[in-house]
Image 1: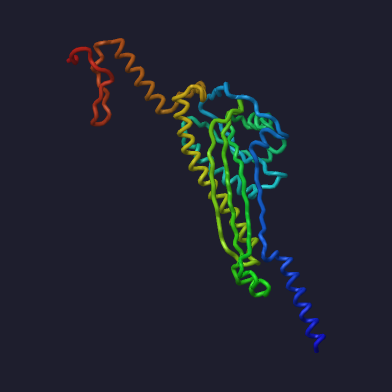
Image 2 (image 1 turned 90 degrees about the horizontal axis):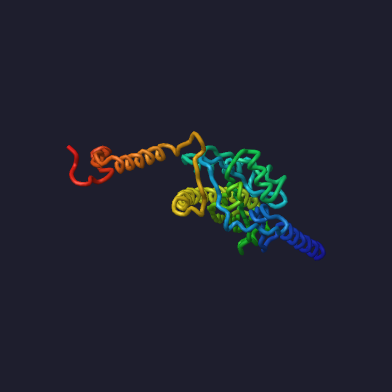
Length: 300
């Protein structure tokens, strides 16, 4: 009987030790995926050129390409189908801009074959785009067993006890480049963090779903920031000619706003050339404004 008890005890201890080693009880597991914009544009430690005195020349309306920067060793944080869906969401932020002619969603497989600035420019020429928006990312997932995880030593406990803490943190960044000069025009970041508890058995599935939801939330925040950065860039171009020079392509006049602004300027010029017309007013609903002040008295 004693031998039977001893053998049973040893077997139980071995079983517990085996399960603990198999499930890594009491420890933390971490995994991560990332894509580096710097490593993609300047591989093997290449030094970026000095672009301080380079002024981009943008012909409006622009054709824009959007793509994910390839991940390390071809690994990605999410599936290719999800990437394309998220890029379509980012694409919608450009659609209502009159200075954007077309947005092309580019699979990152095209960027993997040729790295560096020349590679980006080759892909841009292939798709006929003037500006490239490159989305890079960094995602880290961590799972840690809490004190209650000792109940995982029982088969039932590993299915019903939520003693594993799972955390996923995602950072995405969209950098917009002028293709011809490879100069950075502006960038927009996005950050998200997801935390959840799970059982030991469900941990892998919970982490997988958390990775996708965290990535989507980070992309949503980045899209909102992208809208703000687009407005700020438009303002910077108007205020500082060193940021970029812009010119409308033949056959494009800047939309309704550009046409209205041109008519106002023409009206002001006519006022200066013809004193008799200086009292002409411009009506907009119930509001009456003078394009220019009369020299002496209004003309009747």
